[in-house]
Image (cartoon, rainbow, N blue to C red; front, side, top):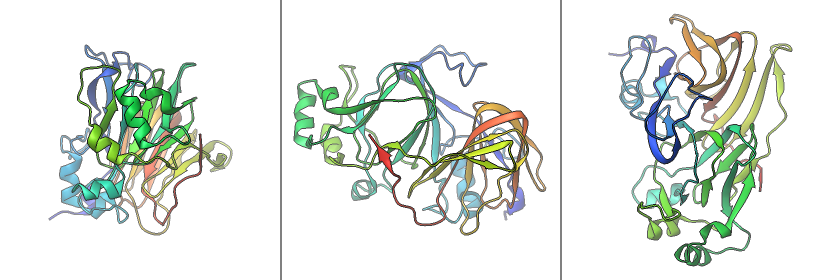
Length: 334
């Protein structure tokens, strides 16, 4: 027998994933960590991510989602017993492979629960930072296949410079890649189907048949046109509504005084807080206060009535959740 009183804000242990395009220097986010391998990703809310605090310490999100269901994941989650969003840091030091993820329709046709639409918040970027989103106007799937075989796939991609604070929407079916020079916070559907189309000669498997069948020639992906920031709780706190889509809502908060993250009216969603700068205390009635700092993620169960973030001097964090009403794809530009 379980109870919502069992739940509290859950600090998640990052899972550091080695990748050939990664880096050993994660100091902009994790200054206390040192690595012998090149780390490409830090997974924060994967199924196998574990809780770092409280009496649920060491338990995975998959196990807790199965145990607590809607009390953890919320009424808006597509599946009642699966955590609905995967959030992670990306640390590209070389170009990622040119790749594509299936959209929902393609994934379900292949027997998967969902596709993979994602978004990228640019937390850090230097002057060389670029991403490629989609195909250049007029490029067909057949032309893409030919360019892959001739090892010229990059020439058909739509490359753009990125700067700190940019939000990029990557709909399922979009051919894409990341160049070096940035640190990205990725929010995505909980699916990790990746079809690698082109890999600059690196000795990794390509998935041309499945990948090309998943490619969409025209997509709504690109740099999100976000509304202006709004002041909240007087003049000392600020909120940016970065992106709203059918799959996730992402907001940026900068706080220098306490702020209540009380859920909006309507269906509830789990909330994921990812600290980008500073530190603070997260409090909820009947729960032990939770200290959080840069690089840490906190899962706020949907059943909690109110959660207050108290900055220690100041704190800057992303909040990812599911929409509580029908939302169209965001407005973007390339």
